[in-house]
Length: 144
Image (cartoon, rainbow, N blue to C red; front, top):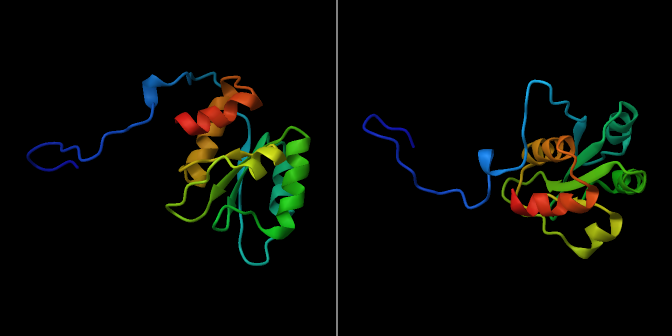
């Protein structure tokens, strides 16, 4: 908290961040297209299909609690992962953690851990721009 008398720290970051990461960004860094697909009552795969058609290299699924995309979108996201489009499962609920469970691994999806969909998008952009492989991505989400 920044106050008139001083800056006060109440929580220390426990994960690597900023300069303690391997993500170097320069003015010439080219970031892959990563989009967020939000689940809502009655949503389907239309948004995710449009993102992939526009060239998205990854889709962050902002799912219902506890960590599920909309039922009509799930099948398309499974097809995306099979075609090497990275799928990250996040939650649209503000404080939920998406653990790297077997059913996500079996689909080839990445668990966003405690990151919001917006933060998961940024981390995925940085990791892919840095050349991280699909196998390393889950470690990235567990570390940052």
